[in-house]
Image 1 (tube, rainbow, N blue to C red):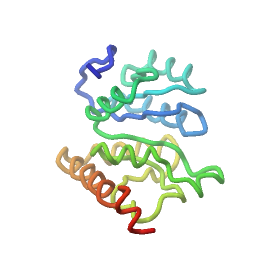
Image 2 (cartoon, one colour):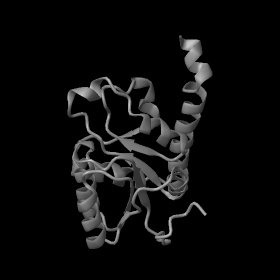
Image 3 (spheres, helix red, strand yellow):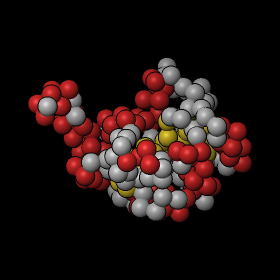
Image 4 (tube, helix red, strand yellow):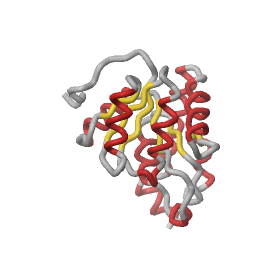
Length: 180
C-alpha cells in the first residue's frame, strides 16, 4: 500500500534520492549523470527549485523516474526496492564544514549502500561505511554509480548491512550519551 501509484517494475538497477530538489544540493549534476546512463534508473522524490527540470528529464529519459513529494512510508518503500541511495550534495559552500547531513544517517539505516560526497562535516569514522563520489560532478557521480553496480549483489548488500549495523550500534541515543 506504500507503493507509489506510478511505480512500474523495471529490471534496470535503481538509485534513489529523496529530499529537497534544489540546485545547490547537486541535483543538476545528478540529472546530467543519469542522462548518460540509460541502463540505470534514477528515482527522485521530493520537491524544490529543480522540479521543472526533473519533470522534463523524466519525460525525455525513461530511466529517470520522478515520484513527486511522497509520504515517509512511500520513501521507505522505495528505499527497500532501490539498489543504492545517493546524496549528491557537494562540499562547495562554507556551511558543509559544520554540517553532518542527517540524510546520510537515514540512508545508512536503510541497509542499502549509500553514495555521497565526502563533506568536511562527516567524521572519518564513517569512511568504511559510505561510498564516496570522488569528483563532485556528473562524471564523478556516474563513476561512483558504475563502480558500485560493478560489485556483486551480495557485496552490495554487505556494504549496506555494515553501514546499518554501524548506525544502529554507534549512533543510537544510548551510545551518544555514553560519549558525553
